[in-house]
Length: 134
Image (cartoon, rainbow, N blue to C red; front, side):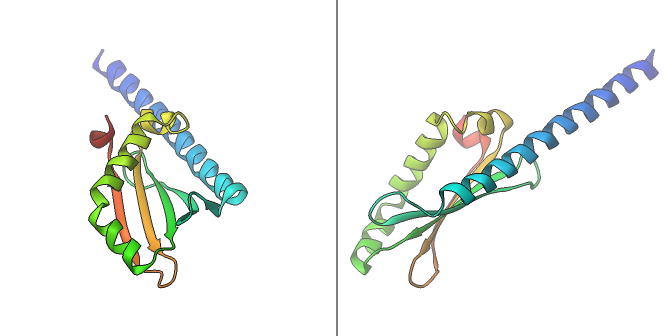
């Protein structure tokens, strides 16, 4: 009896891991195709989406979005004072975006990386886990 339960548990674990791997492969391929077809994409006068990458790391993986910002020194200072607003807006998008629904269901982490267009310096990075967006 216990042997059957253990075998069933092992089978279900392998099946679950197999489905997770397939889902991760899909997310990885989808991010690559989006980047190839639509990036760079001008989001507004100052922001360009350069690429989206799905990293198969521990857990369900991480969807990473790389942005370049073209800001004057004054605009950059204003942004630095409003990082909390940007962080909250990213979280709102994650929670409400229909295209990200399957990622949320899978428990994927989301990371937003903002780089300075001229220097390449990282201006900001935000990472959101399932606990953040649920």
